[in-house]
Length: 334
Image 1 (cartoon, helix red, strand yellow):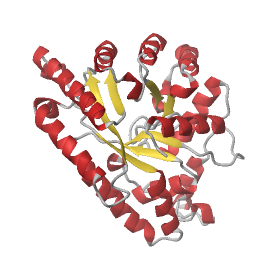
Image 2 (image 1 turned 30 degrees about the vertical axis):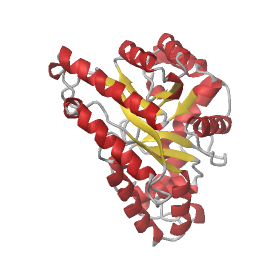
Image 3 (image 1 turned 90 degrees about the vertical axis):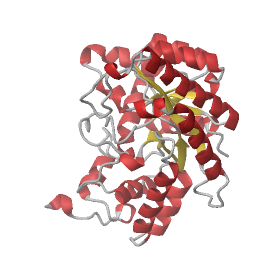
Image 4 (image 1 turned 90 degrees about the horizontal axis):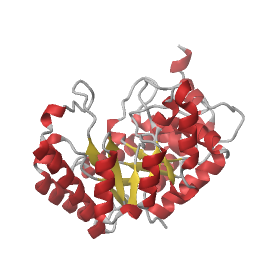
């Protein structure tokens, strides 16, 4: 099969032809690659197949000039295992043509967060989980390994009231009585407090819980260090989050709007102030159109940049510059 052959141009050596074509699936095929930032992805959860391996994903990111990519934590004790997975993948890459330079590029643009997603087990064990999270963050920051020290945020953490027992999260309303909902809030508030203590910005997960999330962020007094990831609400809610100082991050889901809702979605994308916008993949979830329904990975983020750039009336390259600058400022990167 032609798609099984490896591409031989130096920039893309080792990638399948299909993967190279995906990288340039945007409307303009003659443009030079833009310098993308992906402010939220889950490397450990990426799904490998004949088209994309983990090393292929990182190789493509390195060779298309990624400037920033943030690998997100969801469990109090997952940081070390996530970092080890990267290091094992780097070892595989190092033996390939151009592999050492690819690894060096990846180590430059990759950063980590650590946080506790509000799953029922973590909510029930919230006090112990927060203590474990704090220890792991402090241990990483004290590491002599420069790569393992690259913790720039706490999260993702927050509130999730989207009930879908048959979905990936297996989240059932029956598991969330009043006491459980309050415990979920306590877990979120504890992480906001820990972030303040450690001086870290916060990656906020909020799904079907806008009012409750706004209340927690306002109570914390830490809105200026929060990003609302994978934003899924409207302009009115965005205004309230922005009033608290929050950053708004769009994922590939922004490209999903039906024709009747497209103008509303474009208006939302255009509404967010230039200095308060991020773009992310949330890979392996929420692949943007036309890749919707397939496993996502950070290399598809150009499709989201194209959509949002068009909505905002700027070039994709200019939007890349804006998001890169915002990420540097928000995450306190030199």
